[in-house]
Image 1 (cartoon, rainbow, N blue to C red):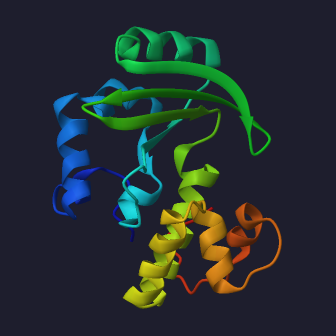
Image 2: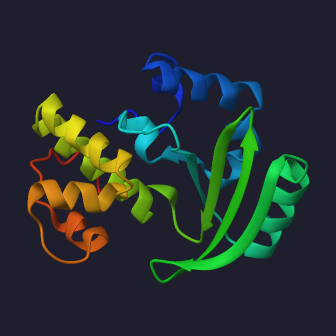
Image 3: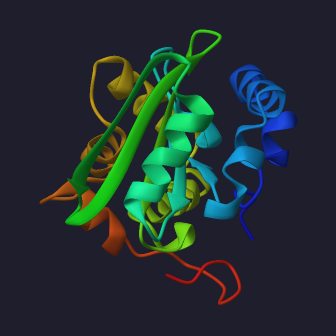
Length: 183
């Protein structure tokens, strides 16, 4: 089983993960977003973040306008606050950005269970790939990210996969037990 359904693992992680845990706890972000089933996703949970990496939080929403209003009321006073509606992977998405104590936060909302969203699915696949390979592979991912490459393209480059990195990664063959993940 993977540890990403709560933020508890961050408390015992690397320095950046501990910092994120403390920040999320101090500002009660997960509690404020609780009704949207929030999950922290992306590079920080995997320990492949770079200094400019932000904290990505995905949410399941039913009504984009209500979600926007809720985010505005809860986080509208935060530094660099912005909110927009966009299409992400052909899904209407609300993207909210702000900063807490110098750490950039991005909150994404889609009308889909969080564990089915592409950001979560990519992270779980990347988690299993990182477990399969050695630390050298992980360091190469981080180096490509330092050079400006996005996460999924970095993985597909090192794995020698062709095509749209956001799609081909979803088809990467993983050995799994039935109880590990289901998407």
